[in-house]
Image (tube, rainbow, N blue to C red; front, side, top):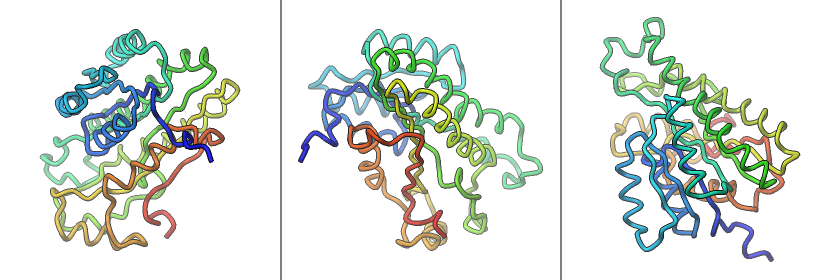
Length: 266
């Protein structure tokens, strides 16, 4: 048995959205297993805390970047490639979520959903994914290896169940679902185009993660939609992300790894 099959030790991994709920969990898990990491976020405070937790190692760097701005993406990746030289894994995890949407009167009304929020979803959730891939693909081609992991959502696979949002101060905006669906075909496109260079590109599709901010009524309604009758915990996605980063997924490309307790199976 190959004990190194699921190893990420020594791999250079770029992670966007590293300060978020799942992003920070991915970062801590991969760092604890010996990965070298470039953490990217528009608000890198949490990422800096993670760096301080692993201060005994110099294999972690934090970069502030607004992924809605192409020039910042280009400049940030230029710094990363100078600092790390090679790239083994790119995890496109960042997503646009705007608190502004919930301060809009009748924020659940699709007919009056602001165009700027729709456009911002595309800038971060799909344009930035495309641009980040462009920044690393040349390096991966020279290496003749690499793993690109794009994070989607169950709402990119099936339509949202709007009954779970009834009587809740919570909603999923249309731009989120549409862009998370677009990621699936971008993944397939890149996988087919660059497979000859031994570069694989896959999607990881998580479902909703339970947090203290969610109401009990929402958690109950959401949980009833899946086979395990509970929302996900951050730990539920550590195994899948390690699998996709490691050589254990070396024959997997263009695929969508759905981890949703059967939400999309119903």
